[in-house]
Every structure is written in C-alpha cells, then in structure tokens.
Length: 388
Image (cartoon, rainbow, N blue to C red; front, side):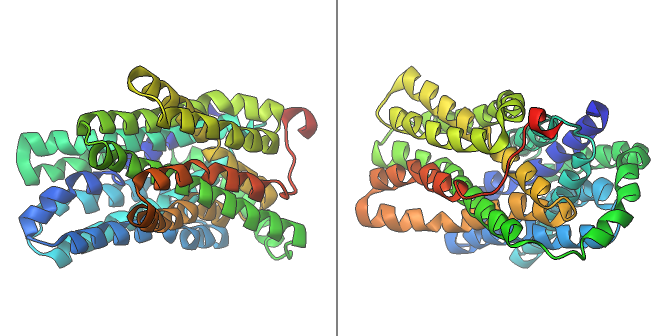
C-alpha cells in the first residue's frame, strides 16, 4: 500500500466533493438573487446531480479506452471554477452553465481517481481504498460550512473563494502526476487487450446485482438525509438545528465507519462483511426512530457507521469482478448508483404524501434489507487469507 499516493488522491477527492454540497447550501440565496421559483431551483439540483454523478460511467468508459491522466489534476480545478463563478452571474442560464461546468469536473475525477487508487491499495484492498474514499466524505461534510462561511464574510461574491482549493490541489497533483500515473501507463496495454475478452455470464449477473444493491443502499442514505429534517421539523415541529445535527452525525459517522470497517472487511471477507452490515444496520434505524435526545444521536450514529462502512466496499468488489474495466465500473458504482438513487428519492415523497412522513421513514429503514437480498446471489469471494 502506497499511503503517500493515496493521501494525495484523497485530498483531491476532498476538494472535488466539497463542490457537490455547496450548491444545496447556497440554493436559497441563488433563488432570492435571481428571483426563481422552487421548481426552477430544484431543476438546478437535478441538473447538477446528472452532470456530476449519473454520467460518471461515460468518463469511466473514456478512461478505460485511452490514457486520461489529465483528469486527475484538472478535474478539481474545473469543479471549483464552476462553483466559484456562480456568485457573479446575473441570469438563470449562466448559473446553470456554471453548475454544469462544476458537475463535469466532479464527474471526470471520480472514475479516474478510483481507478488510479486501485493501483496503490496493495493487498488490503478495502483498507487502502478507504483512505482515498474518506477524502470525499470529508469534502461532503465541510462543503456547506466552507460555502456559508465565505457567504457570511463576503456575500455572493465570496464564491470566488471556492477556486483556491482547486488551484492548490491542481498544483499538488501536477507535482506528483508522474508517480500517480506510472502504474496505469504500464498496465494500460495489457488491460486494453483484456478488455476485448467477453464478460462471462456470471460476471454480468454479479455486476448487475451489485449495482442494484449499491443503488438501493444509496437510496436509503439519501432518503434519510432528506427525510430526517422533514420528520423532525414538519412532523414533530421540532428544532431545525436539532435535525441538522442528526443529519451531520449520520454522515460523519459513515466516514468513521468506512475507516473502522475496512480492515475487518479485508480480513473477514468482503461479501460476508457487506451482507452482515446491511442486516445489522436495520435495528439501529428503528432504535433511532423510537428514541430521543442522546439516544437518538447514539443510534443514528451507529446506524450511519454500520451502513457507511460498506460504501467503498461495493466499488472494490466491482473492480475485482472486472479488473480490466476499472474506469467504467468505478463510474457505475460511485456516480451512477448515487445519481439514480438521488432521483429515486422522489418516490419517498409520494409515500409521505399518501401515508405520511413516519411511513416514509420506516420504508427507508427497510431499504438495506432489500439490498441484502440482491447481494446473496453475487458470485464473489475475497479476503487477504484467500488471496495468498
């Protein structure tokens, strides 16, 4: 395992993903500044989701077909540039263009980043990849704080500050670009030849099942992030700050769970760990629902930690299932699953409108169980002991 390379890639991941949570944080201010409707504002989120997540497999396909090392240094810069310009636009169309630019930067980094990290993770696959992945989780968490801090100090023009982390990260990756890309260049010729080999029926079925599992699991996470505030603010008429703290706890413990669970998954076996944690997370969600105060934070934190421990794992499993298609499987497991899950969250809105927010919450709690059943037939086995 090359921790130096993984740390650099993780920092790039952090800077890139900071830009994914900036838009939702500043959307109320964009709505007021440009005098747009809620529907039009929601369209910005949808377009941002499509350009930053759903199209990632396209960039993964390009990455597998030809060397695309320049995605690594310039993607964080493009992602940051798009968001940096949002505070200077005067029309909705120009704001949309900025969001698309940022989204393309985000989308181009992830398949190349996960693919590059794969060559530095060594034998402890999950442990190594968790170092790279946790950067993205940190970026998600600090993006809103960074955005609101700049806005508080400088107003809308403060968005220009988003560009500086991108510039710094581009310079750092450029300095180490040769080290980061040399393993890919040496493996590219062999990988290009093996890509022409047809996938087996077992590989195709296992990949489809893994994509379904990861999509439904992401559906549960995004659903909780969206509906915990609805439940505590709209249904229970509680404190918005309290709901926000619960969401933050859920997301941050997910990142912690990723680091804690990684070595266990490597030693225990990836599929076994994945299926076990999916089932174990369910009772903690219900404990959280029926608890208050400290216990609510404890149980939502434990649920987030257990469920979050598997997010990088499914990407590793897909990479090991199709080792000569690293770019496209990374795009599918990271961008496509999260993007489609985000769109699918609208179904919870239908459930909430028809049967109430508590019912929608309970349906979300059961999503990991559905993921579990998709995971059972997957033909996959890996652990450090077995790989020797």
